Image (cartoon, rainbow over all chains, first blue to last red; front, side, top):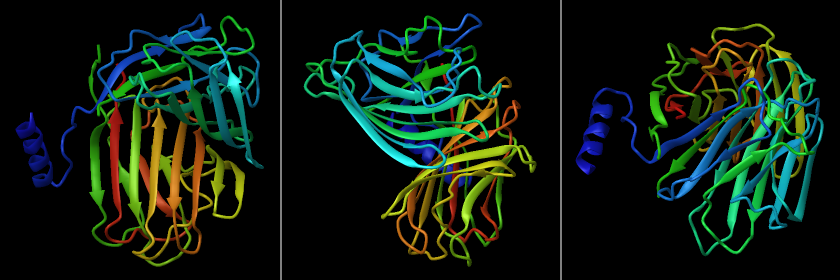
Length: 196
Length: 173
């Protein structure tokens, strides 16, 4: 209610601190990988009551990939060539740009392979804008990176899902290269909704 | 169904008089991620970078990979086994109130006690002597939960009065 928010703001100002949380950013679901590792992480039955989605996560691969590999992202189980992406990548020594059209998935966060330093996890923040629209293609932006004290990458990415527009009800994050259990233990992804 | 609202302000400050550092202490472990948003400029020296240390750790337990663009060139760099996390590196903290720098820093899964901590930062300085927009990923090689964050200009500068720092907590379902 408006008066409750106003009271929060006033109380925050009087206390010299900040106002209490509003209700525009909500946690929807979290998946944390257990000891068996995981081939994919799926957020299903995503409520259609928000304006945007954000996925925040940390991840380590269970395979021996050591550098410059990424998880993939799909929406609504669409595995057709309805995706495109661009990325700007820093390797610690050079900045490079790349992009590919007409793909079967979007490129996601950088993977720290099981051969890398123990306990190191990459991290990502993924924004999915206007995910409920049935008239617009969906655009994704990702900020992610991993650093292993001597190697690593930091990346800006954008992705497009250009299937005939439909609301996103499922997001799948999966490991490439046919691995059946490529997302390692303690990897964790949390889905949030942002109201409009 | 959504589990509830989050992205909660934990603490905020506006620097009242010139100071060399600011420390968020006794950070509750009840959230999943922390987001630190800062804006302002330096008191006197032009071009310092913005760094942090966590849990009072001044050892060489941090490392950084950077991606930046300065209006002319895109570049990437790395620092290994350093004594602080670099929340900016190519951009320089201006020393003028007309040249404000902004930082958004994500401390990912800060409260777990299993993994090393990864910190992702965005820094922007649009004008001044060292303008740049950049993204940085930092590793703190420690599995402890983060309960304290000290931020400061590096190597030697003070925050000017009016520098704002706000720490938010995000709790996953």
